[in-house]
Image (cartoon, rainbow, N blue to C red; front, side, top):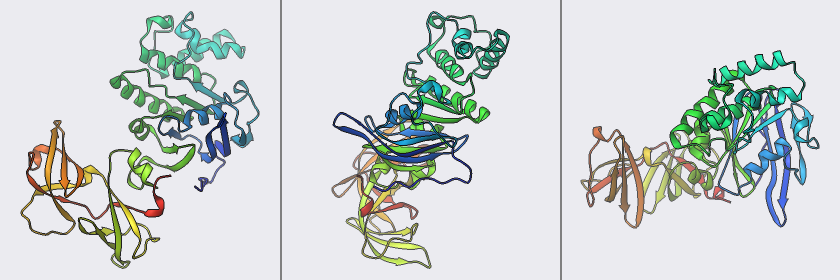
Amino acid sequence: MEHSVIKTQETPMVELKNIYKSFGDVRVLKGISAEIDKGELITFVGPSGCGKTTLLRIVGGFTKSDSGRVVLDGEDISGLPPNMRDTKMVFQSYALFPHMTVAKNIGFGLKLEKWPKKKIDTRVEELLSLVHMEGLGDRTIDRISGGQQQRVALARALALEPKVLLLDEPLSNLDANLRVVMREEIKRIQRRLQVTTIFVTHDQYEAMSISDRLLVLHDGVIQQIGSPIEIYEQPANEFIAGFVGYVNFLEGTIDAIDKEARTLAVSTEYGKLEITLEQDDIKAGDEVLLILRPETLSLSPSHGAERQNTFHGTVESHMYAGNLAKYTVKIEDRMVIVDQYNPRDSDHFKERDNVAVTVPRNIHVLKRGARKE
């Protein structure tokens, strides 16, 4: 798979140039090239074993690549140890010193740099305010909560104002509600300081909510780099479409193209669809994969009449969750998931009801050559 490098007008903060890494006979990274802009928050995301943490550790100098280069703000840092790079890592375990107070943990790096005590105290107070922990500097680590420990680890990493902040699944030890709170805190701090940040997570929803851009890895290869909207609405291949959110796939063939009206006529095994033409590299006769997100489909009672972009099926199951009704509809031999938000304002269906599933015109189309790796 060819990997394009994202170009920017100014010097990128981080450039990854053809990074390879193997552990024994297992090749974990297979030629990673990308650019990270100054001040952006980019997330390395992908399933377990895809190489995202290894790539983060290579940026930080904790793991050495087999080949390739890491360039930080125009300087090749590939051969430098972690303490000589202008990067700081927040580890999954936080790695705080339990015998030290909150303030001493935050000021530890400043003390190593031989800052005067008064200057350290001032900087620590600034950081305590930044992470909303004013007045807690004298607490020991065992007397603060998990969320507060995460804030201390973040403040310690920011103490020396690194050019790049590296976050290795920093929220994985927190409960679901606190993860959401801390996600917003990280975003707030990152925006305020405009510090370039690389965030690693396996949670695609977390990645989507916090990031300016996502770098999606699978099997050691970059599958796509883009904004959350681009990744969700214009997935580059079947893997991306299935990894980020639930999706119904439907195979089809392009019957005709009306370039003036920007429409495609597509034949599927369940009937014909008319779809908005997004890309110009599709031609009549191409086999395609249609990406049908559950929330874009709509349900209505089936009266047997043929309507444009509508298939007929039977409700197999449904789940009501207040703001969402999730239906499984059987269309011939296929199960299709349909999500209805604000179900109080919609028709209600029960099992074995005959329904019509309407497909919108503006769905994403993948050429068969863009199937998953």
